[in-house]
Structures are given as C-alpha cells and as structure tokens.
Image 1 (spheres, rainbow, N blue to C red):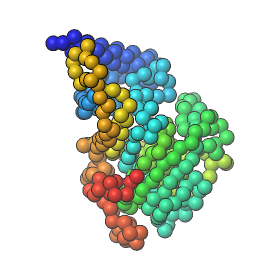
Image 2: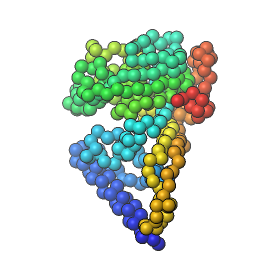
Image 3: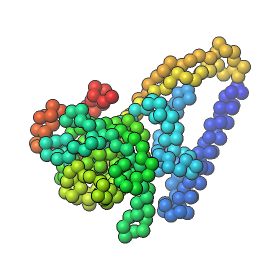
Image 4: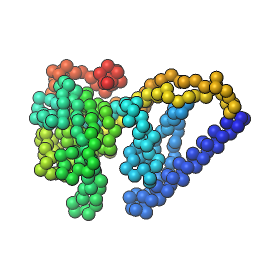
Length: 328
C-alpha cells in the first residue's frame, strides 16, 4: 500500500467520524430546543456514484438540503452544490401534483405579471421571493417562511425563476388536480412551493405550510378561486407533500488537474485535463409512477379530452422521453 493510499484511507475515516459527530450534535441541539422528539440515527450513507472529485450518496430523509444557518447545519447538500448552481452547471427536474387545472379553459388565473406563457402547457414564473417571520395564530409559534416580493414584510427578496410544464390532468382524492414538471432555474429556498402557490395560483397537494393563511394580506393577489374552493383537510390526509425530485443533471467543468499516478513524486507528465462531462441521476423510487394505486389519482373523460384539445397526450410512463424532447 502506497503512502497516497494510506493518506486517502485515513482521510475517508476522519470524514466519516466528522459526519457522525456533527450529525449527532445537530440532533442533540434540536432535541434540546424541542424541535425534535426522537433521536435520528444515520443508518444508510450508501455511495450511489463515485468518480474523481465527485461523490453521490443516498441522502438520509432527515438530512437538510437547504442551508439557512451554515454555521450550525454544516452537513447540507446545498452547501456542496451551491457553486455548481451559481455557474449554471446543475439542472434539476421535479414532479408535482397541484390542486386545480393549470392553464385549462376553466382556469381563470394565470394572468399575473409574474407568469409568462410559452404555450398552453408551458409557463414561466419569474417572481422574487424573500423571508418573513410568521406568527401562527392560536399557537404562539413563529416560523420563518418564504413570501413573494409583494408581501410588505418580505425581507431580502431575490430573483427566482421556475419553468412549469403540464403533464396531465386528473383528480386527486376526487378533487381536480394537475400533474406537472417543475424546472427551477434558480435555487431559492421553498421556491417551487411558493411559485406554485402564488405565482401559478395552484398550491402543491399536501403542502400544509404554504396555504392561504401565511399569504393572507391585501397586497397578495390570488389568481383564481383554488384557495376558497379547495378542501384543506385533504392535504392532511396525504402521506407527504406531492413534490418529488425526479432527475438531476450535473456538468463537471474541466478546470482542475487530475493526477494519474499513485506516486506522490509523479512528474508533470502524469497530469492531464479531464474532459467536460455531464452526469444525469434519476431516482429509482418514484411514487408518481404509481399514481393510480398509491395516491388515489384518477383520470376522467373530461381531463382526457382537455389534454387532447391542447395537443398533449404525455403520461408519467413516457416522462423520461418527454424531458429529453421538451425540457430545456
């Protein structure tokens, strides 16, 4: 075993110890602050893909992907890919089910200045969002949520852009709903949830935070009657929010030198510039492929005719081909 291999093994061991220690410190902190009522262990950090300078692990459900307090939540995926997002080297695709028919003939909304229409099925939401400390009524609990720039107490709004592609119309637990593909062009916290709720006017099914109450202000204009007609109790009956990370593409730039030898004294001829590569990762556990069985999703004749009239016949089973041909 060479010296470089020993150093590498020691580095991996120390990194595992670091992850384990910091993870348990975070859990202990949350329990002491009464933000969590039980201890969460890291049972699976399985490596999905490994390459020179690039590692993908199976994320634990309790591991945060956003970072509001980096000095505390230092084990967040967002910190690791922030630079890639800034350089436009990451492309993420999400599946979601929202309440109501998006862009259909019976939708009186989508007339906001925040929404631009490429077609009846493709919409671009450009709406700056920021943070706001919201006091939930009758509970005394304050929560930091994300609000649109039109909110008078919106703090530090930042520009955000999301592309929405309608995939299918149907009913979720008997209520009209739309199956959509979301492509965030920026990586803001809760961007998709707020853009769907206010920008699009169709909240994501199962989202119990971004309902009408946090946005209840005269400056907030609702695009349609979804909020007044929707039965909020249905959101609590769902097992989880109908938002799913489907595909991620990462482009690795050829900006670092790669060493081809284990010899620590290798000469300059053992270095080369790697070619630029694009990796695509797609989840194997996609709940949206089994909508009929798992989430009481039903297609009716009315929604089928609606899709045909718009020239769209895409189903979740042909989603990968649809992304390759239509998403950009």
